Structure formats: C-alpha cells, structure tokens
Amino acid sequence: MRTSGYSVTFKVENGAGAEGFAAPGESLFDAAQNAGVVIDAPCSGNGTCGKCRLKLLSGEAEGGDSGARHISAAEYAAGWRLACATTPRSDVAVQVSASSLAWQNRIRITDFSGERERAVFAELRDNLKS
Image 1 (tube, rainbow, N blue to C red):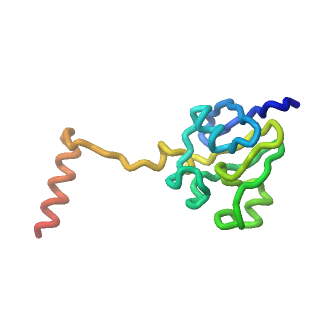
Image 2 (image 1 turned 90 degrees about the horizontal axis):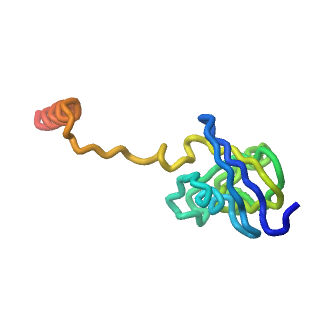
Image 3 (image 1 turned 45 degrees about the vertical axis):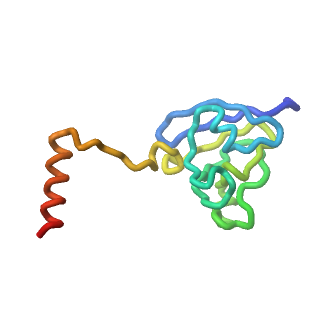
C-alpha cells in the first residue's frame, strides 16, 4: 500500500468510468473533480446538500455523512456515502449514480433559434394570453 495516497476507480451507472487518485486526507469529491468526474454539489462540497452520493464498491473509507442527515443507516450499511465527506483509507472503487453527475442535473438553456423551439414557445405564450 502506498503511503502517499490511494487509487480511486470511479464507475458511472451508464458504464463510463475514470481513474483517479486521492492524496492523504483528500475527499472523494475532490479526487473526482481532479479525475474529471464532475459530481453535482450545489453546496460546493461542504456536506449540506446531500447530492454527491456515491456507493463504495471496494476498499476502505472513513466518514460519508455527518450525523446521517442525507444517508440512512441502511444506505450507509449498503455502501452509500457522500463524496464530500468520505476520505479513502485504501485504494477504492466507487459507483457514481447518474443522478449525481453535474451534467445530468443542469437545466437545458435554449436560444429558441430552432423551428421547434419557436413553435413551443409561441404555443405557451398564446396559452398564457387566453
């Protein structure tokens, strides 16, 4: 075992994955960011939103949820953790749920330049007027 940090394997529900590294004391959230796995965390990783859920598949980690605010005891026993509050204690593999990925949770913004978008917008506008 390395004393300078741990290997982290990120597996995403859709089959994608990434390899990362966690320095001593570094959270899985920070390791994910460094590996290009962008986990949604509106609270910026300070443990208040509970959106950075992942499942510990193998290895040892410490923490995961302060006071079980976002993860029940049963979920914790099943391996679910908050990435921002979890620090690896060995090489680990984790599953990142698709709903935790930032790109899945962003609102689509359109410029209404397409014909379909303009038609939908016009119909909604007309419905509001009536």
